[in-house]
Image 1 (cartoon, helix red, strand yellow):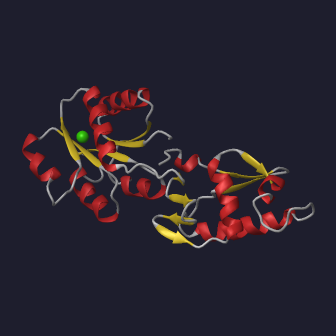
Image 2 (tube, helix red, strand yellow):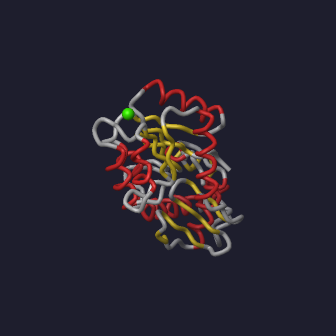
Length: 233
Ligand code: CA
């Protein structure tokens, strides 16, 4: 399984970089933001598995943010706070943070808490499920979901997407993809791959605005671009 993507929102650079280094060393993927008002945009466009959220932030404070994040997603949130008096509110029903860490803290403690919260909140992937960011394919049930909403794919579209998702970043030739398309197992029909890909893109587009997930590789074929979400499950 790929590394979880941790979003660190902390305006004190020294603290942010210290946490980042420890998480990076432990194999996590990290992004650091130093203000609160860009957090919601970032989590809308990037797959984030957990947010470390400072309370006192420029732009938008951590309490307001936590409340807002909870309304639209269940991404686990660990609050970083210097105010012990706030702790009850943080994890209470009003804000719904998953955990809190009081400053000053050791970076080791942060890593341990991140792991504990992820273990608790991240359901294990079913064996026959492939997931890239918010897009999931389940081979047993033959379903495809994007942001938890089902996309209705034809068997051919499903087969092509399954192959691409199984090896993100790997370029597949039209011939390789054609192999997944039923009924056209001979040369000259490679264009049918293009039309299936075109339909797939159309179906995926609404759920991933501005992101070109299936990329054409000139003269070769197609690949799935997981650059946007290398956070995996
Ligand atoms: Ca701060």
